[in-house]
Image (cartoon, rainbow, N blue to C red):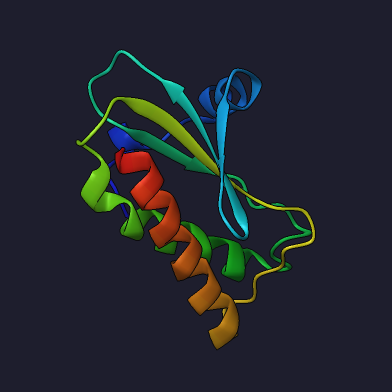
Length: 113
């Protein structure tokens, strides 16, 4: 997990989703909005349609925060990750975990630029 200063609150997530610039990966959309704070802040939106249980939601949320921990101080953006429609994740499925990691790697490269 990343420290709280690098995470977005619910109101900040709504603001980013309203005034965003989207970047697309295979299964995710990264919505980016510049900020004046001096470091990146991250949020993720998983609905009940994407992850059926709270265990899976927490698993993927923690996995996302762990994967973006190294780019927290490299930019000055608010970034919200949203799965594409119809994409489902299960925390015990090796294919879902591999696909998730592939998408996060691709989006991290886009965000670094």
